[in-house]
Image 1 (spheres, rainbow, N blue to C red):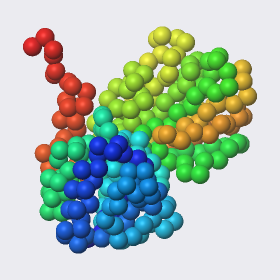
Image 2: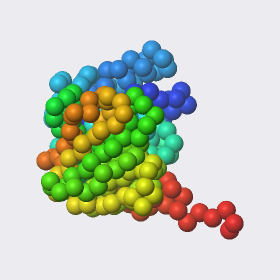
Image 3: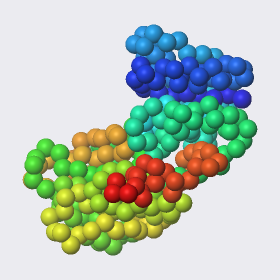
Length: 293
């Protein structure tokens, strides 16, 4: 077996977990390719030298013969791992070193048990919808895919922007707002949720269109099938707006239209036996917890 480990930074208190994590691979003679910047952070900043058998820097030197990718950090690190590796055929496992963690849902306490189950094939794979974005008449994106959402936002002025949204060529609405989010089911528990969007289960074949601070209070989020193609045309008092994919953004001129559609490939993620999406909602969002009881 061969695995890859991606990370950016962790707190010093997470070192004991990492020691157990890497010792598991070493004791079973599992080959480990480690993201070189993460290795340098651990050795230079935290004084910890992890076990590994090789390094990678990006998708250009990533070994496609890898069996699993482990993302160590929070959901932000998970999203960065998708961008860095750009390989949708290899399942990603999220190890949570932070706080909430919808994607990085393996807690510190269950790391060894999780590794044992993965080595014993006690898991199932969920394929998650990705978004593909094309910018016409303006800036380009180095990596034009997103797992959570594609967003257009006001940029160089405090005034609202106008976003004409078309679905398969038909006008949906002219949104007067601070921005507009197009979220996947995975992204429905991220930015979209924070501005009032609904939660979708991972297998839902839909997008959520969620306005950010709309001027008209009757404008609400809407769920549409993900086989639709959306085109966004933005105008406003400034000269540019922001086009954002997950944690990456680029400044775009108003003359640029944004095309959003479902990507041809899906991202594979691992869910351990005994874990479920509904269990994650209860644990992470504290559903059913009532301090009065």
